[in-house]
Image (cartoon, rainbow, N blue to C red; front, side, top):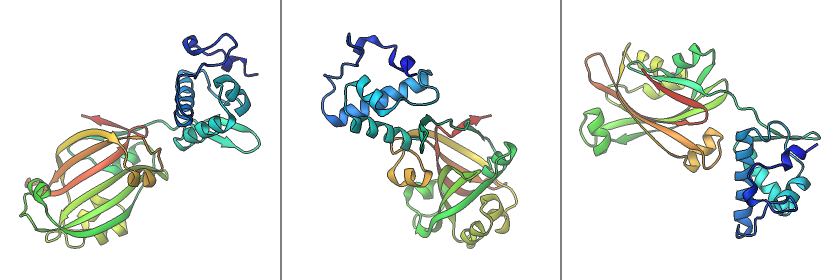
Length: 259
């Protein structure tokens, strides 16, 4: 049943008896990680497309013990690549397609999700009244030390975490922005309640890095997942900055699209 899995494509690490030569792999930690890496690659290439071979088969194939295989499989399960079903086995988890997220003059999370027939929602992770530091004051064109509302939030679509954002607003101009967001779950609606009916994106800068431990927990992703970081400034119709926002998108769930 599992002959196709045993016929590995890469013969450079395969010995004559059909096992993979891991003698140069070092300690046990390196071994389980390399087993996980090899399985991940074979899943990506389509060598393993549905059910994963039993632990005994994989242990024999890789020349390691079952505990090493079990740890590798657990790691891939944490990443969302594998999914165990009790009494049936371990299967390749079919991930949903990446959600397209257009970045433009009027970027709106809720509107982007609704256009793709997804149900958007947001919740507050934490909020605080903070003084503007040098970097934030330059982006919001306010005085250093000016009071700002900092809002940390989690955005989801169809109950799947998509991004975590940190926004800063003038506490003087938008004194009730936190309460308005808590009631609506939408920055656009919260700003509308605060008297601003329209705003646009003035600047967006994108970088990428590995997810932090705090974000990984909230986004329910692997501890080494890649995130796309958007740092943006929104302005009102007169060009006055009203929000500086840093958003962390999971790269395997969201595809940013400019235009």
